Image (cartoon, one colour):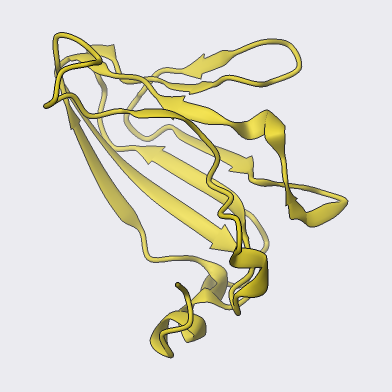
Length: 137
């Protein structure tokens, strides 16, 4: 999909979110607005995360969407649906060391049911070798 070497990808991260009554509850699982770009990674062997691929592993009856908050046309929310995936860049196409501020996003709270997903982060350079040698943090 990304036409990058498979060695540039981090290991998949599986995520689980359960329903909660309110976003402020201590047992509520969600992520506030953020970017997958990590400051300082441009100085590490693997380079910065250039892409994120997020895959929904189940249908969610309520809530749990992924909202992109800073798109030029306004916020857009993708609702969880089994087998659906979202791919987005974390960097600018013409400046691959520079964060793309348009792709800030958040994981909205699940209000009914459960949400299972998988994150796949792809770096500029070989992540696997850097990880094996302990050079990714």
